[in-house]
Length: 344
Image 1 (spheres, helix red, strand yellow):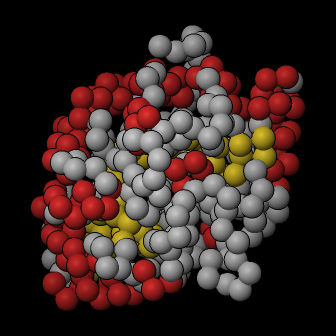
Image 2 (tube, one colour):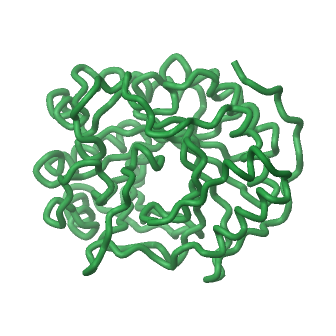
């Protein structure tokens, strides 16, 4: 249950968060937990405790604290909120928190999930105010799915979740595929057929150096140009206009079939110049970039000061948002925390 009563609806103020490069910050990703029931090899080491029992590295903010944070960000012009993890559906109270965010006046609320627990929660989440969901699905082959996620038998549950999300009206339905050469790159064409058959948006994501181990290398990255060429050999593609702040290059099928393809290419085609995002970790750290080497601790202002101090700290952090990341460049330093701790 929620630790604080629902907030009353408010009207979002005009956007006021702008970084030093003139980018308006309108999108917020909130990680509600670091815990995850998967150990995807591009994210976690696969060592130590069982996934569901793995303890967070820091203290998770309470729902009441997360509500206060969300209220502050909405007051500063945030228009879109995405809830992430870890696996956000592992944390009881998520449905109530979605309702809380919706009551703040946010009309674009999304969720990123591995889908394992989504099927029974899709309709309640939609009723609470969730508008969209993105489900991770890195293989369409049961054995390969288990190899990548280190969870046997999970594919059927994810496919069931996609059906439930579509039935609940969580639309457009997005499927994220992290491509790793030698693991699932042979399935690119299969995923294109999947998008057409399911009328969903399949987005391939280039493998980024954010895993807890040392799997990443440039050789494991499947570049955007290769993905487009391979799909085009079986289904001709037409590029779609890129919306402001959008991370994916989007394509529709030339023959008018249902579905859509997208490619998020931070390694071979960075989109930093139009980034509109900031992130808050489950333990209350603001990160202005996935690859930030600095985190801004919001807990002191959140717990010990008034709203003005919290808003001021957020503004000062955003003003120092990085111009771009430096993946693959000499001297690149991998963040100390991996994706599961930052928030997907």
